[in-house]
Image (cartoon, rainbow, N blue to C red; front, side, top):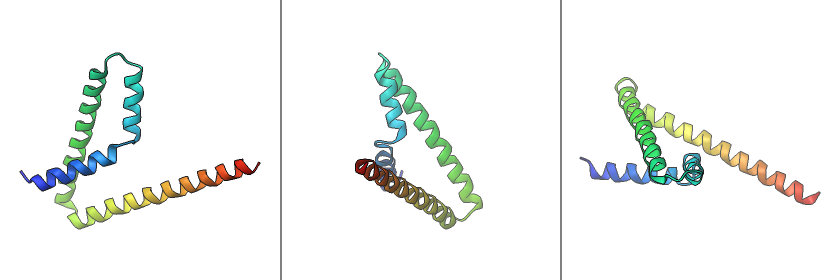
Length: 102
């Protein structure tokens, strides 16, 4: 097993998942339930299944599409998402400033 790949994947996914919608949903569900272990088990299983689908799709796609092209497409997707988030934050900040002036 490639431990450096395992570690970099773990760190990347762990940091990406902190504070995202999935974590907020889990906090919400856990707060309305008296069984946090069941919430943990369900959310863990969902993340494992989603990761399995992603890994399987990535492996299958890499057999058809060159790895460099897949990485470029993923990078482009993240770039687009980042730009959209920055624009959304800028609009929200501009709206907050406009609201304070009123």
